[in-house]
Length: 280
Image (tube, rainbow, N blue to C red):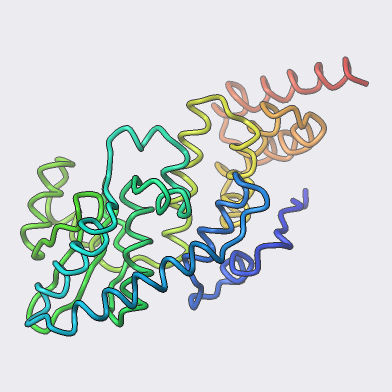
């Protein structure tokens, strides 16, 4: 079955689908925001980022070393402009949408990190995203040290081994499992993580129409993954796209593990067919 997963208005997301690595993550993040906020224009957010970049560039011009440069970034974005994390933000979809993070000052690690990355780029700081376990971070390769900046915690700056120990304590993972996760993340990996965060929140809240928009993007980014196609079918059913759900569930049955076919796919396919027959 061919999936119609096109995004005609989202030029930067289409570049990501085309396996381009030179994409603008902020533009992609704003395209995701437009799913939840139809009619959203990007100018206000981009102008805010440009102003913060110029502001930060002025401040770091007198920084004496790499650590002072990174601390200045935290003072600018978290100190002066109030960007910070909040545990309650993890259950709030707007904390994943960049323009709302800037407007409210509140975000989750990955959305706050994207703001830091965008401002750093504008100020000439080579910061990179890191898809570390349980807590997204940003990474800076200094002249003599590798540093990590944690936008969720007011832009605190951690040296490599301090960061490694902190993540090991938080996750109970061994150090040798965490170390590969501290390498810079690819744009595709970052966007998938953003979408998975949103998917989790919307599913927990039974907000199926919003979950449908998120799952379409996840499936488009990972079209060969059975789990994503299955989830698209189940979200289609929950969001009352019954004909699509039946077709996609039938397609999933051809590739489903035995336990999935009986316990999930066949059950939901039959339920969708019953509902569809009632509506027709």
